[in-house]
Length: 330
Image 1 (spheres, rainbow, N blue to C red):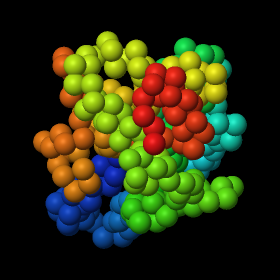
Image 2: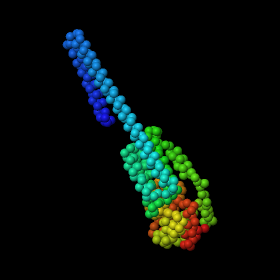
Image 3: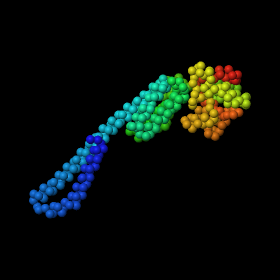
């Protein structure tokens, strides 16, 4: 018998108890009064009591069956959820361990999401949808069959996965609140630093000053634009393409999508609106990213923003590219 049928049966039994109780309350005394003393009266009294006890027992047994069925269902759903959550983590783990996303791996993502809709709560589904969306964005940035995941993208994925894990806790009833944001941040930092020997703080000299990687590149390109005020968008792209040019390709470095070397001002703002991350130089630290534009490079027909995301292995190709175009780099 299904849980729904058991509940219906229990409802009918409860209704019978109520009807009998009302009938006994209203009609028992007149009935007994009109029945002569003796065996007949005793039989009627006993019968009413027996019927009431039988129906009450039926209700209690039915309720017990309902509870047992509910318990078994909850146990099975719990096991299925744990299995599904583990499968999702395994899929994303495989992607992040080798640092690449393949077509085969991306195609594995929709099915767990569909199964989540069958088993999980809305917030859990939304949480994994963000992970799925981010993985799709990374894969779509390049036309290669396997797309390399950058360190910045890994950190974003770790944060999204941590949020998903927090929702899984709530969904499974292991906790009654989200993991504290501070703990999530700490976990992401710990994960992202695992296996690393330390952050690269190398500085590069330009015009007598030392700058960190991302600021150095901005200084070089900003200086070029100032010294060549008639540069238009086409001319700048010839000097430094969005993907970094041949020097970057020969070094095996892919700069595309969110991580292009530069974007138009509106495109940089769109990235910020979509991701919440300031990936391009728009304004100085402490200023309003949506209003101030003191770090936007102004060409004759466009405003561009230089990427603020640069790894150590990208510096040599950049400097080589600039020197090949006769641009000052020191």
